[in-house]
Image (cartoon, rainbow, N blue to C red; front, side, top):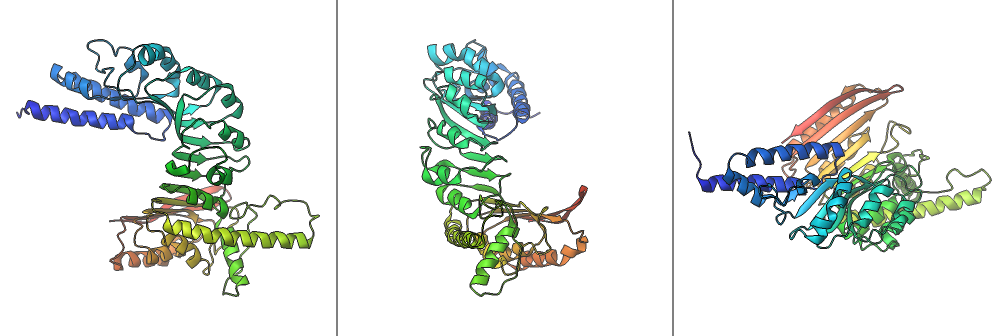
Length: 457
């Protein structure tokens, strides 16, 4: 039997405590169920280690700095409490414990402040009147109050309460843009915009220009934005330019984009410049170029339609050129995910024409900071092959093909072989993973899912 020295025991327990502190400090964009499950595992680990012996108990007690359960504060002043009040730096709780936080606020935060407490973080909160009421009554003195996830924003509720004590929102999920301008104006007290923004609204459009470019809402510059996801609103080239150009520290970008419509406008520019191109059909969605008049009545005469076409062409060309520069010189964008928004609705065999592939491909391949690239609902691997041949800094590739034409799986066999040859024959490529999945769809929905290719280095 090997008995470790006291020094080694202490060192190992401190490493365990550091692990626990990091877990409790971490800011996952998770559900309440995941949060509670992780929290239970951590509490059991703390208990199991601290009850081994008196010495181990004292080491744990002196080194746990972050907690994820408000109940840990109830006995914090007692002699044999594992948690010491002046050791705690961060408290992270679910919104279900806001009332308990309010109840203990006076003693622990005001009458006898916890000396080293820096932040109280509230996970996955609904902006309901009850929650906002409690938040407005909290009076933090020596610490910051932060929302991790704030969902279902409501302008009326925000107006009802004074939220000046709330210093920041880590993750903002916008599920209704119908009154978003007024909602954002009521978030003025916050020091910075959230580090993570997700738009899942199907009502109206998010005000990209006002939010990112005009600074209409008196937020500081969007230097802090790390993640931007727009998963139910197909974005335009102009809006994408505002996001990229105004967010120099952006690391993760997830967007819905209609490739049919992008292909249409690129081909249109080539036709005007009398370059070889392939005619493509315009999708009626609001991606790439947004026009409120797309579905207006038929009273517009041909001159008005021609003027609209001319303005749209100029707008596309202007913002496409700006976007190319912003993509190329962006230094921090690490992960890019492009979802082909309209592939199941406006699907054709040549989703991206051969003449458009170099233009779209160079937009991505010229950037040297992207490490992870994901394409969703594509039906061609030609764009991926182009990027592979023109970029040696992307190391993780993931593609989900959408097969609505009932092609046999062998249809993609030659493309996959070419990709394999490119990866294995090019010494400059440092690919860590390359995965190709296919989803087969018919009128009844998804009929089959299969991994076609899975390269791991």
